[in-house]
Image (tube, rainbow, N blue to C red; front, side):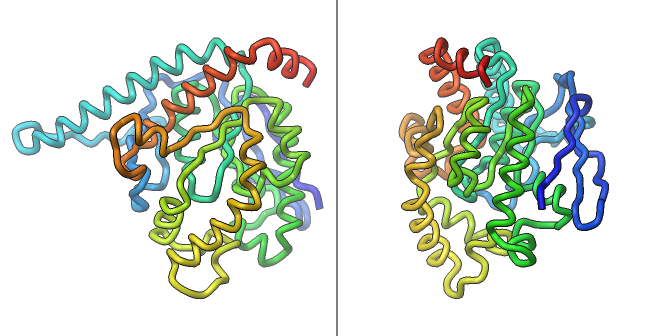
Amino acid sequence: MEASAALSLQSCSWIGSEKVGRKTSGFARLSNRCLEERKVSMLRFGDPRRSGASIRTGHAERKIFCCHKKPSGSENFHNSFDEALVLKRKSEEVLPYLSGRCIYLVGMMGSGKSTVGKILAEVLCYSFFDSDKLVEQAVGVSSVAQIFKEYSEAFFRDNESEVLKDLSSMRRLVVATGGGAVIRPINWKYMKQGITIWLDVPLEALARRIAAVGTASRPLLHQEPGDPYMKAFAKLTTLSEQRGKAYANADARVSLEHIADKKGHGDVHALTPTDIAFEALTQIESYVIENAAAFNHRFILG
């Protein structure tokens, strides 16, 4: 069964799905204008309670800190505002180099691809897609874990490739891919139509985060018994050994250990998604400038 993602260039949010037998075709309309006043939420990478939507669009919910009661809150608010402003300025520097090319984020499960991807899409005025969500929409099943259970991992991978093929023909997208998208060479053919960024997170940090939020949404982890952290770390270690060389095929690498070291943090959990997004923009800029001729040739040829 092939996944069909009917994508057009008019709005940036999913507006529904149409079932045809066992197959579901997702509708996406992408926005060709950006709401400049949309607010980027400043989330802590290591706080699983906040790992939901990092972007609020339309009428943003604003939290007001009373300076006379909570000066530290006011300081945090201004620090967050300053970080967002710096990030926006960086995006304006990078945007001319992109020429509408898509950005694909790759990395292990739990590495923050969706959270960081939404922030990058926000500041670049791109549209954001999560390839796992697109597969769920296309197949008509509520979760990747359920797809694994009802069909198979191979079935999911086939549909994942179809989704990436559809996305590769488009422009001005930030795409958060599934952790295993890198294992199929055909997926690299599609993703290399744009720029690929590897979010490289220490396995200990990934295991801690996954253990904190639970493994129900992680089909490669959920069925294994034992301590959540230990089984997550063991499985992540195995996956890292299997996929490490594949992740290294990315055009640029964003190392959280490197960012934490630059900022004087002893733990990557002290980083915000904004820190990571800023480094991603920096790496994108460096890559495009250093490889302008080769990349432009590749992009034109498709």
